[in-house]
Image (cartoon, rainbow, N blue to C red):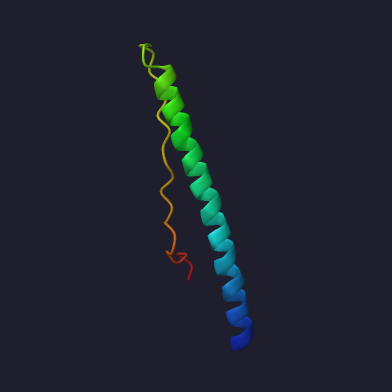
Length: 67
């Protein structure tokens, strides 16, 4: 593979990685909002509700493990 083609593919891959990271951040934000609303609704109730686990993916700026 030529150096130019490799650079182009790497650039595309990192761009897609950033897009996925943005979507994961949105999902994480939604999960936190859902957990907060469940906590607010269930303050007076004794029935436990499942805790929303936040994703454990690398944060912005972290290189993908495959690279």
